[in-house]
Length: 322
Image (cartoon, rainbow, N blue to C red; front, top):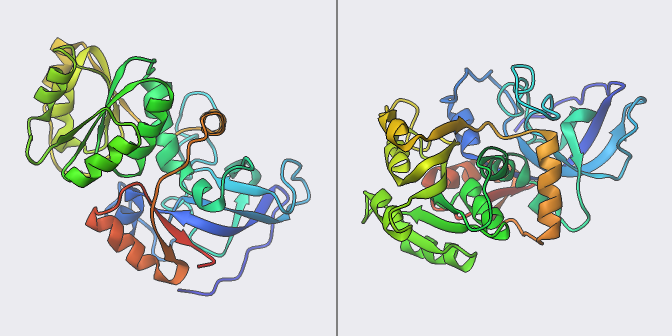
């Protein structure tokens, strides 16, 4: 813990009293300095926060004191396709993050919240939920009646489960924990596969789809699970490549892309425009984010340890007022 002086508020900036922060696996990598890029010493971590606007710069017109807002993972990615500028300045790695009582942001780095979402729920959305949305609908082009395969029961996969079922898709989810698979089925998962007892889980996906394979796979494991993902796809299927839970150093053989005529798309969260579409869907379908547990602000290290343990189901939350 450190005490810091708030910077002077720029003309286009907003000061937010952060109420809640949620963790992503990326935050664990940042805390260990094992992320893609070198992390500056003393950087404030975490990209996902929600809070109340307490001050606005003189040229800010879209926000007022008292507005309820969430942060954007990429403040520069407002819409359209990603480019180098859009995916620069990510919170919690390239720029200071939100694990702080007061957060100063350019106005374009925030988004207003619908009334039905609490601060705790809203804090889970900027990275995991938007990554799931982009994977399924922006890149995955998922349609009602199609089949999606999800890996594990962390934040991205549980959001993807909720979004996919709201869209009328069939969901097959994997986990090493039978109890977590049971919980996933209570959220609507159609089939669960324990990848510990069935390491060749792609064969079961093919069996469950009458040999056709899945339309979309949300790949959160990385190189260690990519080959199974490829084998589980239908011809012409799509892999949304999201995570690196199996590590950054492992290698995978992508040769199955050829006979499957499949595609792999790297997913790096999403834009403000995607976030707005996602919020509309969350409200329309009354989707409630799944929160595994909550920690106090001064116990953030325990929250990261819980993330590292892999015991969580859904999102891990840090409450600033706990």
